[in-house]
Image 1 (cartoon, rainbow, N blue to C red):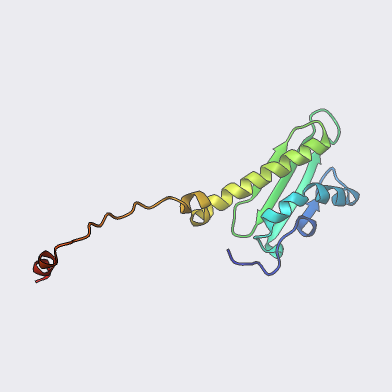
Image 2 (spheres, helix red, strand yellow; image 1 turned 60 degrees about the horizontal axis):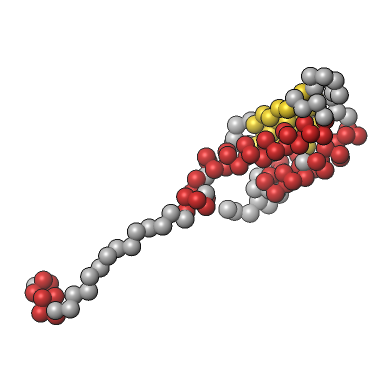
Length: 138
């Protein structure tokens, strides 16, 4: 995998949408910090993440996390967890899984399990009769 000159990070790519204020942004970025390792393979200027919540802290609350990466399909994850912290963790973990799945589908040659398939060894019988070896080559 080639190194990315300006790797994407949550802190750089995160936008807060409906239901959150800019004051919530740092707290959310801390919650999503574990995504940094997964996002590092993408360019920061081609990556966007937006989190929003509908009916915050009410019964039926819905947290949505959207991720746009240039050249890939948009990924949308949602959670209906009643606890905001648990809902954020839920959408974060789902995004991580979907990013991993998308990478495996797009780049199966980098999948460790596909690379490590043992190849059968060719059976070669040593020829001990030099006269026979000469006769076969003539």
